View 1 (cartoon, protein in one colour):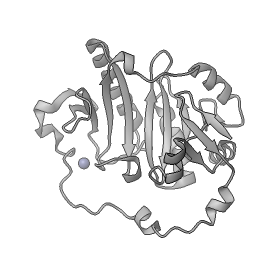
View 2: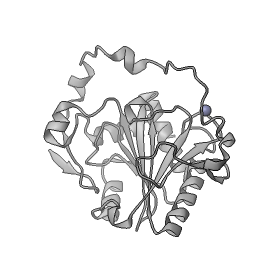
View 3: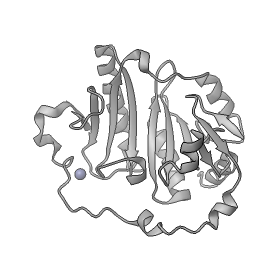
Length: 253
Ligand SMILES: [Zn+2]
């Protein structure tokens, strides 16, 4: 079954969960390995780089030292530990989002806000951080019927609770969407469920903003794109989102 998400990304979903559970993996050791470097964390001493800091509140916002696009900023949390389950973490993120949106508006740009956590999500530093890239408004993501999509999903068997769901076109197993609005702790609540189901996991988080309330897309990542995905120019997902949502609901209080 080929499905499309609101950004137009296609995914093929097939129920292969039982087969996948038996699949051997020669690289399991790598999946479990912790980082090897012992060097000092550059973000733990970010306040020494005063010229890069554009904002200080419950977290720092700094100019990206290695930008892909000129207007790139990094939200650097004051606490090294990277996890939405930490008390106050989501609120700090929300504060960063507020600043990035304000900055984008002043500069006539659109803010792309995202987080890469862990090796398989493309993160290069372990210290808690997110990123904001200010792009030209004409380059912003083209969303297709976002609010209709949200309403339908929240009423479907893919709903986890009244503000989160596993989307029908889940790009990866255990993808979750959270209708955050300004209630940042909702992200933490969903992360707590995911942690119970998956343990530690790498992920990308994308914050969708625009003509609708803040919506967080959490995409757990276990591997880089595979050959079949590159060959088909589509994601492939062996875990139907209905089953994943039902598994996550088991952990609700
Ligand atoms: Zn650090």
